[in-house]
Length: 338
Image 1: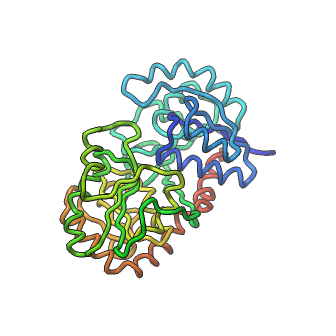
Image 2: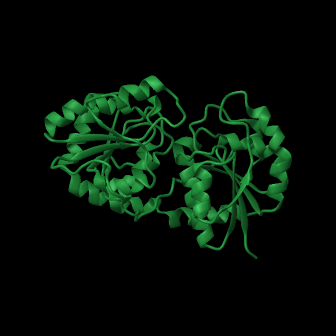
Image 3: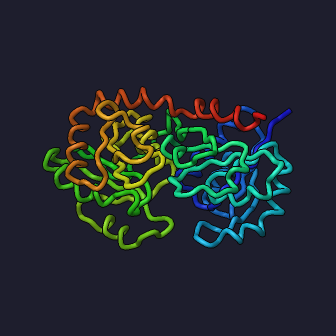
């Protein structure tokens, strides 16, 4: 009998958690699963899923902001009906946990992608809890959380770089431009990077999709120290154009972008916070530095540039543990286990 999964997403615009979900659905469909995705309404996430042949339904959980949980109650009857048509309901993110009270008796998997500060009692109703990293799982006492590091495509299709070719090395950031990501530390490190590696280019690819901090975004994108390019589809295909990928986050549950870069043979520099040390082997596949220290960040980038070839080879080899097939191998048995 063909197994079926209802995947619930709380947003219409994809971020890292939604890209993890799309990859899981792709992997399950390859194995014969029937999958359905719910989103709050039309948007980029629905477009990407539809392009892969995923069935779509609408389900609005009330949004991400504080105090919006009660709005999810209106979605309970529909959520229960949809869940009743599938073998398992996959709740992609903590906001989706709002549905757990009405899904008692249905098999549920709650995937936590955040460094949470508290664990609501209702989360104990999930049959399985997944965490993006050991750092995330350690914030979920009593839930028996299983660690499932985010999956990546090991051979992403290359895309053309949005910047013109040049002779110098390219140091890049790819992701949301917001304070949590620490992008200003890379801006401040740029002069020292160029002094140590003349001709180096520092490129920032991304935007502030949720308008977390407009002033912060303006400080980054308006700086003459970097080249800014807006987010683009299939950004994973850009990784091979970078000599170093930098993720100077102040808080980061898993750092999928690091594994994506490593899969392309690009070594990385990241903050030593939360789940990032689980991705980066310091001194072998890249470097780890204290957050909020532009001088240390610049020194680490220069060290990686000096050892770029050997670190790149090690990064590509190590990234195999994050491959999509390995992820589905680990998660699929948990979806239907009783």
